[in-house]
Image 1 (cartoon, one colour):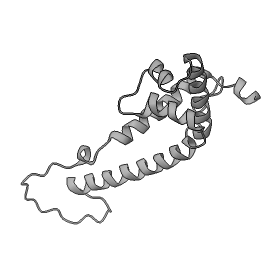
Image 2 (cartoon, rainbow, N blue to C red):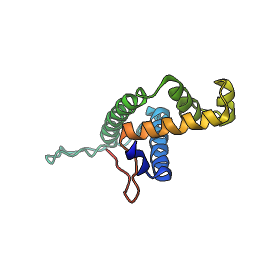
Image 3 (cartoon, rainbow, N blue to C red):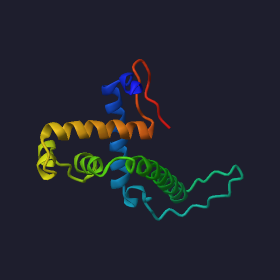
Image 4 (cartoon, one colour):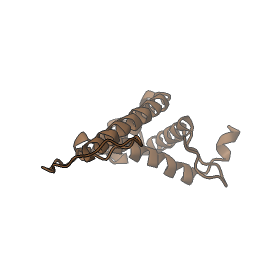
Length: 147
């Protein structure tokens, strides 16, 4: 493929690693991180006609909703791209990047009964395919494309 010759490998790898870190962040984020602190503060908050909320509880609720909307959109986009990979490529990406405690490369190659050289080839191919599917590939002389 001629298009792959113009891809900046290192920059594309950094871009896809950023996406994988974002995946793990969304995966590990729990609602407790966004819970408001509730104190016995008795104040009268007059209604605001500007459409803004001034309550800490309301602001936190809005942040939670926005966070879950962003996470849902991210997971849907990621899953569509992820399922374009072959089963072995998905196994490698999950074991190497998405599990709570990722395995070392040599452990994955032993577990899948493939040589380390084959493992590295499949992993690199999977990362490129994932980057192309997520449209975060970086071409030589370009900036990271993101959507």
